[in-house]
Length: 246
Image: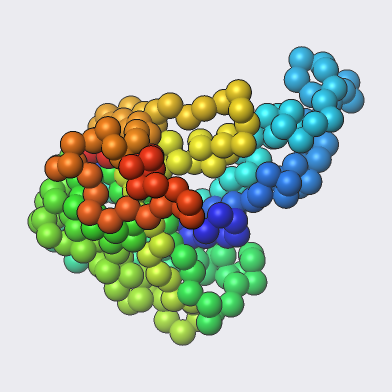
C-alpha cells in the first residue's frame, strides 16, 4: 500500500470523515507539483532562494506532496447515533462510505469489480490481533456501543447493505487510532529526508492521545504484540513499533 489511491475513514468522538487518499512516491510528488512553489515574483524555493536537488524540492512540496486527500466529506455524529445501538451507528457509517465511493467511481472511473482497500482511523480502545482486525474494548466519549464488536466486519457489512450493484466491494487493509495515523503519515512524508524525524503523534481533540515509535526490545514482554512483521533482513528485536496509548 505504498502508493496508489485508497479509501479512508476517520471515526472520532465528534465527527465522521470519509474520503480517498492518494499516496505518491517522492519522484511522482515532485513531478506532480513541479512549479507549485513558484512565488508571485516567479522565484522558486523557500525565502526567495532557488533549489534543484530532489531532497530540497521534497522539503518544499511536503507534507501535502506525497499524500493527497480527495473527495473528503465530514459529518457530525449525532447524540442519537452515539446513544443508540451499534447497528444504527454502523448502518449510518456504511451509508456515508457508500456516498463517497459513488462519487469516487464517477470522478476516478473506478472499476466496480476491483475491491477498494480501506484504511480506518478509530479513536477508541481496541484489542488488535493484526493490522486489519480490531475488536472494540470500550467506546466512552458518550458512545453506548458494547465491547467485543469486530470493527472491520461491521463496517464492511454496513457498507454492503448500501452499495448495491453499481459500487465496488471494500476490504479492510489497516486500522489505527488517530495518533498512530498522524505519526505514520508524517513518517511517510518525511522518511527520506535526513534532517527531519517523526518523534511523536499527538492528538488534542474530543480526547487527548499520543504515540511514539520505540524499539520492540524496549517494551516489557507483556506489552509486545503477539505478531510482528519485519522487513527482509531486519531482526524482530530491532523493529520499531508505534505504541498505542489509547
